[in-house]
Image 1 (cartoon, rainbow, N blue to C red):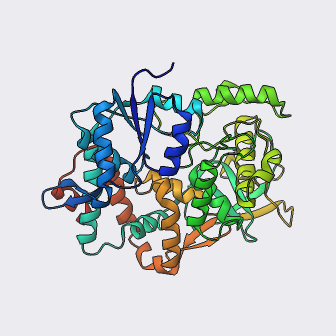
Image 2 (tube, rainbow, N blue to C red):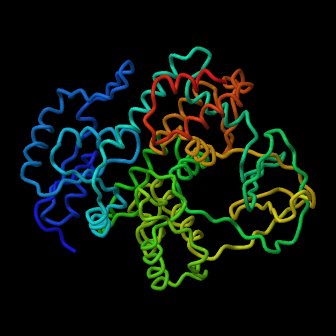
Image 3 (cartoon, rainbow, N blue to C red):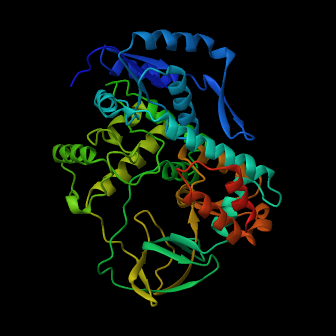
Length: 457
C-alpha cells in the first residue's frame, strides 16, 4: 500500500541514505545522521544518560527540526546495536512531543523499503533508556572494580575456561568436524569416534550470520584482518550491479539463523523459476523467524541472480563473498545432504560427527580422536548469548584481541592466547557474573545491585 502524507525517514549512513531515497515513494524524505548527532555521556553518580550536542552536527539538527515540523510521520531506521540504539533514543528525545516510530532495514530494494514503512512501530524511548543506562552502568562499575580484567577478556575467559558447548571438533591433523547437535565437554577432552554408516545423519545446513561471513573471509584469506572482512561485507550490501542496478544481499549485521516467512515464500517462487536440482525444504523443516526479530540471516535478495552471471560486475573479494553466501543459502533452503564421512561416539549413539561438505581429509580412518573447539563464528554466537557482543562490534574486537594475545586463530578456529592464560582460572567466577547480569536484562539496574554482583564471586 503506498504511503500517504509526508514521511521523514532517518538512517545513519549517508551512503545508505542516498540509496534509500531512490527506492522509497516520493512522499518519503530520507535524512542521514552521519554518525552521532549527540555524544553519549553517562553520569554514573546519578545513573543518568545524557546526550551532548555535537557542534559539527548543528546543521543536521536544524534540518531535522524543520523537517519534523512538516512531517506527518517520523521513522527512525538506525541499527539494532548500542550505537544505533543511542542514536534512536537521542532522536526520540529531541523530537518529543512528535510521535516517532522505529523500523529496521531488511534490504536495499523497493520491496524492502515498503516493508520497513509498513512494519515500523512506535519508538519506546523509556525502554531504550533502561537498556542503554544499564549497559553504561555495568561498563563503568566494571572498570572501577578491583580484581576484574578487561570486560571482554573476562568474557573470553568465561567462555574458554569453562566446559565448551560446541558443535565443532577437530582431529590431530586439524580436520574440522561438525556434530549433529551441540555437545558440552572440557576443552582438553579427547573423544574416540568410530566410523559408521550415515544412517539418519544429515548435514546441518544453516544460513549465514555476520559471524559466519567474517569467519569465511578471514579463514579463506580474502581479507587480511577481521575489520577488513566486515568492511567487505558492508560494501557488498551497499553495492548495486551496474547492468541492472540490483542490490545483491540482505542486511549484513545479524546473528539470526533463520528467515521470515515471506522470505521463505520468495525463495520458493525463485526456486521454481530457476529449477535447482535439489528439492526445496518443506514447511516443517524451515527455520521461521518471528516477525518481531529485527533482522534475518544474510541471504541473496534474488536466487535468480546466479554468482557466475555477475562475477565480472564485482571485484574479486565481493564476487567470492556473494558466491559463498549464495551457496550457503541454497544449502539452507533445500533438503540437506547425507555426509560422506560419518562417525559416532559410543557414549551417545544418536549423536553423529561428520565432515562438512567442503571438508577435506588426508585419511579415511575407521577410528579417529577429536577434541572440542570454538570457531570464529561459534565464538561470536556464544558471546552474543552471554549478552556481551553485537555483530557490528565483533570484527574490530577480534583484531584487538589478537593484538593483545588474548586469542590465537588457526584457520576457522579460535583458541585462548597467552595473554588470556592468567584469567582462565577465574572462568567460573566470570561466568556467574555474566550469567547474573544477563538474567537482569530489561530491568532498571541500580549501582548497588551491579556492584554487589561484580564483587560477590
